[in-house]
Image (tube, rainbow, N blue to C red):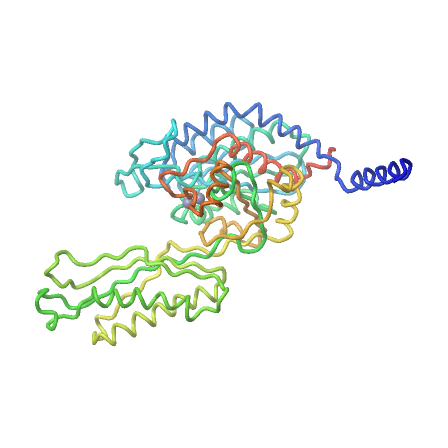
Length: 446
Ligand SMILES: [Zn+2]
Ligand SMILES: [Zn+2]
């Protein structure tokens, strides 16, 4: 190729790529610097929260910490919303009202992560029972992220305008905290948001990475109890009894046919019997067996199908065992149930574009939804568009090893789950700040 032609081609390539690339967002560099400066203090908050988890609706000290931080930054703070929830409002001129939610509760797990700041606390649960506790779902990173976001945004009020509502929510793990805050007037006592956002830290992505998507992100969850009843008696005389252990076993196996035989292939649904308890002694046929189930789906009709099929199978098998009407299994849906968490497509695309710009497409990318449940779905009440995204927490080398060996990394809710703090916390603060700046006019003052 002649030198002149080569030069022309090179200029062509350079000019095309210059046109393709969006101008860098100056807010990104500013936020990066602020997050760097805040990190030592945020790490201190994180390790304190991690070492001292509080269980659902018992997040008194965590809530006080959030309230104090927000008050010091100029937010109008209301405590004890929905039991232990905190709402901080910062009005900064005219513009949209954007709500940011972080959940606060830990889990009744004895931590075995090996980190220096692991929890050894024994705490009371809501019923007063003493339990080991652990931030096994990384809600401590969410609280730390909320505080970091508040600090960052409070220091750059020239780059956004509107009303910012920060919510520290209790009791997500028992999917009761959001409902409690709404019962206490979250959208009536405080500015109703035009948009609501949240993040969740996950073991499934490399630390510092962002996973996003639109539509269903978390499944609907129904929790079900089944009391299988029979007629007890001596273990040596089964012919004088109706054995509920045998009937419960048949029910557990028959339930496995609902998803495999009744739900259209490819439609996500889960029926899990997580607990089965019956009997006291080997030579006694018991009177009853208790089953606890969790059901998951991305569609209300599919969930209704699961529930109806379980009732039908319980009833049919009990009748085939010869039980009378007054000893039919008792099937109960518990309040520990929640709707699908559905990301608004327009809102999700806006945030995905901003994340791509700030984190790069290598680190911020679309990911599949999960069958877990999230009570952030409650925030979509009254037509409020919502979006939740994931922040990775696991050492990238461990993710790569897991992909190579097929051995899963410790998941959220595992006693050995330990987020890598620095990239995780920085990504929590940076992604949440990026989202708020996207929604509250961060580009206006460019
Ligand atoms: Zn959880
Ligand atoms: Zn969680």
